[in-house]
Length: 96
Image (cartoon, rainbow, N blue to C red; front, side, top):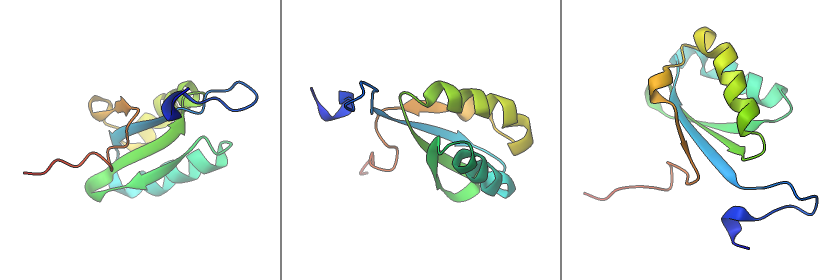
């Protein structure tokens, strides 16, 4: 069992997923509120220009994606920017 595929004692996967997306910068607060109020589905890291990273678990990923589809138009979600990763975009820095 490695750290990325570890399971909790109840058998639920604890693999972390990272969703990278761009939303309307004025609506980031709304997305954060919905994530936290909706049973703590994940937590949000924000970058300049409305770029957000949603940190969630493998188990919560389908619910987070459904929530994003539902509120996407409200928050100005640019679906073409949505990416899912098992490694945090914050940790993957490229040196030039």
